[in-house]
Image (cartoon, rainbow, N blue to C red):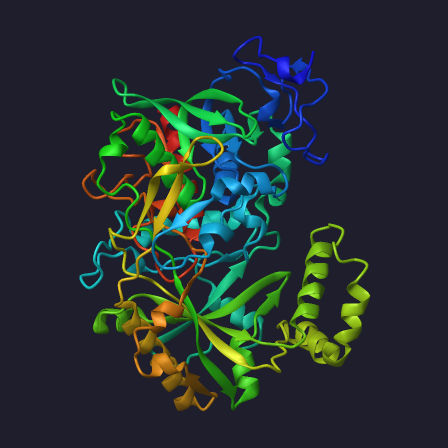
Length: 568
């Protein structure tokens, strides 16, 4: 039987999978495909399934990126039958990436094209793997920040931050910085009471498709469907339930996949795009009548704000060199104290030291080699690593000494040190994700129009943060800091030079009521009984840190909620 003629004999049957070990031959029909009862975790190619009605499952997860994988794995571990829809394959493919073609109507946004990766693992194949929890003020309703306020508090999320850290193999979770400094044989540093020094956590294995490989390939109740692009939702206005998700492939195959619950866990832009498109196709869909749909898109404003010259080198390095303990990396980061934000009406903001080295290319290759070996993989630069090591011989001594004796990363910075900042932005309704009325992709989906707006009040936060950090360095005598000329003169045009941080959020903001947002505090879409959104698209505000840790914590919280429905 040819692959093109394969059909499912019963709604509880799936065709036998292709091996996860073999390279994905995207969009090529297999020579044959036998039908068999699934007895192991499996990965399917959507193009190999000809039926238009796929077997029903407990939960469909749209998106095989970091959020989707964690949701799927957790729910499968709880005994649910889960199907994950991934728009890409097992490697990045130009054809799949073309589906991201979009129109930018607002502030330049690099992530619109560069940070939307359609592949199993999603953006986790390229991200830094950095985890940092939000602070209480990030969840608070702030009088000086319009559209701020989450329908939950940090305290409600703390247990899920800890569970997420454990789930990902990171320790400790939230808190525990003083213990890390102690193990690094350094007292927890203090610059001033206006600036906090916090430690980020980094994953040993950043690619979550690899991290959870055993779950993705070894659970009979967890199935992945590759090259399966969700394009529409079938909503029943009587039961208030989504009945099925419509999926298509680039080759023209189309099917419906029914389930009891649906979790939209793709990236911020694609999740919003799916709900916008389904609302256009079904005027009865309640989310289509929500005035917040697509609104308040945000990112962090990033810029090199200052240059630094160390005066007390040992003290400076002991504060800002990353810590390495038991294979775990902890990076020091500066954060504006909440007291200052409240007193001066500022946004949340953070900064890290960027050490510029003429040897960076060689250093990066050594890091790639070491990280590959540590996770048991064959380094992709195995043949060239000797040449990189030879170039680095002149810093090999301090690098090795710093690591083995002091558990720190030696930062070669012959080209200088910069303060790289990430600033929260004011969430504006006008900053929005919309659909183009004319342009469509290969599947007939309307193209995205992104109108990223920046309010302008961010300039006050950027300037004050830099001034406070500079004053702290001067007072302690640790370093001299030269501000960017436009920051020093409070020139608002500096905002035109800010770039996005690939921290896309908003568009499907959460709120307690339909009038306040698209999803409720438990991430269920208002007006529906079984449609949920997991990811940073639900964030009312962007906070000071990258979104992933908080999005993952919320995702595990959602998993508990979905599981409670079954156990009720």
